[in-house]
Image 1 (tube, rainbow, N blue to C red):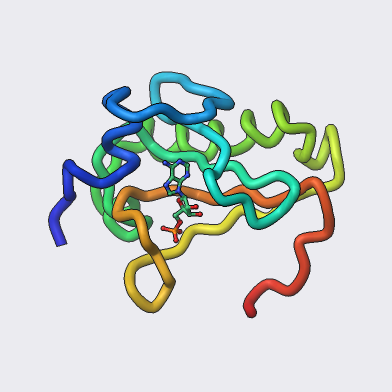
Image 2: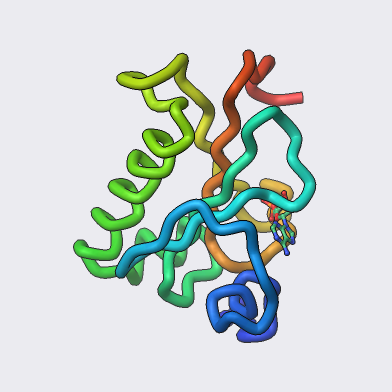
Length: 121
Ligand code: AMP
């Protein structure tokens, strides 16, 4: 599946619709999920046009890959859930249909601020 420029996160990246921003740098944008499933529920997305983690793994540059991982850690620190500042968290990416992905732009969910519970329900 090709990248859909009209997906909601593409619109957020183009500043066409607002987000509750947590962090932004050259490689990533992070914002609070509009429908939080835990006390803390953040999203971290790469700025590049990648549909899902498989697309990213196959096509992103090494700088983009490093930037995404660094971005996740930076956001966790900002939210005080990283291992060195808090109690930990869950990072999760849904991938395509069976993975339950709804928005076709790669994103990691960061859940924390409380025990996040069973890994799969
Ligand atoms: P997924 O099912 O992994 O594709 O997750 C998509 C997530 O995006 C869901 O948790 C939604 O609540 C969230 N979401 C959808 N639209 C927005 C938006 N405009 N701002 C922030 N989060 C959103």
